[in-house]
Length: 94
Image (tube, rainbow, N blue to C red):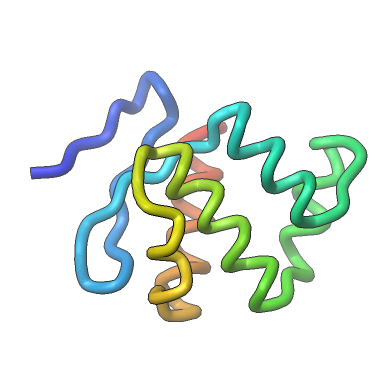
């Protein structure tokens, strides 16, 4: 059974039919900043509200990678799964 480490800000969510671990690591944050063209991580909350499908997939891939999962799984997630997973990951890292 896949478990999350709350001390690291990990969360386990269902994506593409299986439980997956997500984590907003420093590396994931850097990938997200690059994918969204941010110059400061403080811009992230406002930018999250206007993500395109490709950007949502890139953010999800970074969070999957941060959790030790295969980033390619992001491409198989539904929009609802991706949005829910993103919300859960951000809440866990707060």
